[in-house]
Length: 210
DNA sequence: AGGCAGATGTCCT
DNA sequence: GGACATCTGCCTC
Image (cartoon, rainbow, N blue to C red; front, side):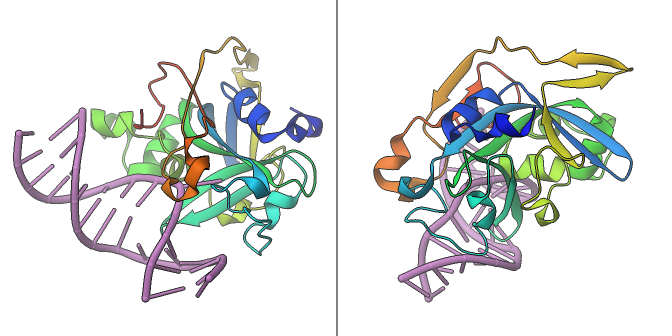
């Protein structure tokens, strides 16, 4: 992925990063996951968006930067959510990453989530290891420190391949995408019914919402 | 497998 | 003071 890739609009970006790899590097460790669920937030006219009504604030600053910036915010006082800004500068669209599938580094993920080895997790915990926006941030150790940084940098980036024993493994472009209404934005009036949630059909790690 | 309450900080009226 | 792009634990079925 290059800089230009992220300058498409928020709906295009949400669909095109499905199936791509979200890769996290920290403390010399690498975690590889696959993006399986996203939502679009379409800027100043979207009643579900943080920037609705052109609400510029300290919090929403990264959204106004050019596409490809990380926007991390705190929700319900205890959880982080990861977004990628879309489109060009001053067009504050973004994509919320709602769920990922673990590919590499499962032991690291299990520890970040439950402070236990993967083999000690219950089937319930295994199923719920990264199938939600707050859960995936815990799984990948994502917090405010990454806010406003580029999603092309080594700490956290999106790619269409990862390395398995020095061999490139590419993502599959042929993905069956399903759509639905966005989750938990009942306040957004007519915008709550827009079909701006996208997920990979039948993927085990999509969040619990139908 | 599903419903409900509680946790808890930051942004907004 | 209230809302919030959520998760967990505890309860019932």
